[in-house]
Length: 193
Ligand SMILES: [Zn+2]
Image 1 (cartoon, helix red, strand yellow):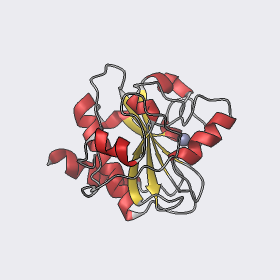
Image 2 (cartoon, protein in one colour):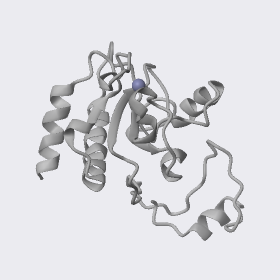
Image 3 (cartoon, helix red, strand yellow):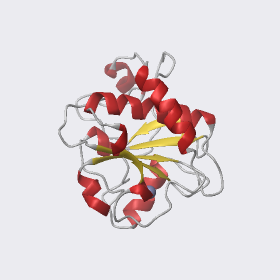
């Protein structure tokens, strides 16, 4: 992600490469880092047939913050596969956080309705879109990420939906003000390119 060998990262942080002991939320010093580029690792999988979009319904947050909240609910860590940040809690606006759930190819804990936890990729945007709108950078990140996942897993547009659009779900997530018109327009443009 930073074009720096793992051995150098380990040395700079007094970790052993073979068995690094890391805490959640631990900040690592990356020596001589190239500019951060978003790296979304895609794994071959038959599991992913849908993409479900959520909002956090909070003004602030990040993946670690939701991890703590979801652990308190008795879940096995942050329930989403991806979190798109809004510039709060130390994260950049539009930053895409990849959760351990995605890296480990685990089922979601984000939408029980219609069995979606077992077949849908969960993307959460930080914010409350029943009163606010996603930031321009969050929208850009969401369109980029969704298009990339749709292409790789051959997911059709009709299988990309808001949490509240799932059969049997009763929620207004991702918010009554989520800009579906803009999202569709930009997603279609991306998919055509
Ligand atoms: Zn939701």
